[in-house]
Length: 153
Ligand SMILES: [Mg+2]
Image 1: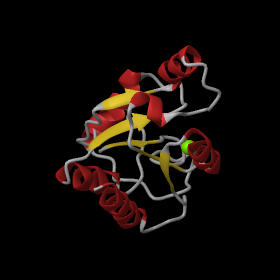
Image 2: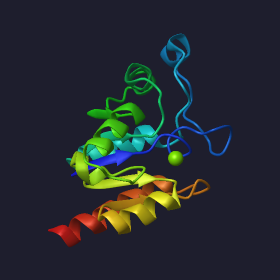
Image 3: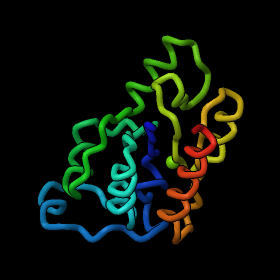
Image 4: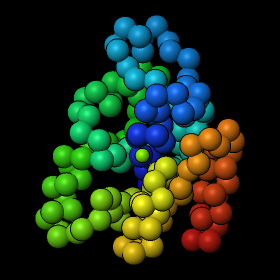
């Protein structure tokens, strides 16, 4: 399945909402942003299970900078959708949602926003809404994805 992740307050904290991965030398040199502790493990586990990982954010960060951040932790999301790409697509399809993973072909979108969860119900896309304080977020996401996959199969 194609699984997308939100950025702000999901994988990258606004300030110190959650623990972050240790910054490697390369991350420091490249000026990469800090990412949530467990992200490396989670992405690797999902890829091992045959899933494809995308980033889907309403942030205007450039694709280049987002790629750089993930790359510096050894991660290579297959596709990155930022707000510029998102707005263009939503506008073309006259969609009023803030995000619509379905129109990009995403199977499950992971986000901290309850608003996105509500849009998911309205527009018919699947979300997993993440609690910022969830220390077991990696395990919880994997079991939710497994459950969704079993229902689909
Ligand atoms: Mg967010």
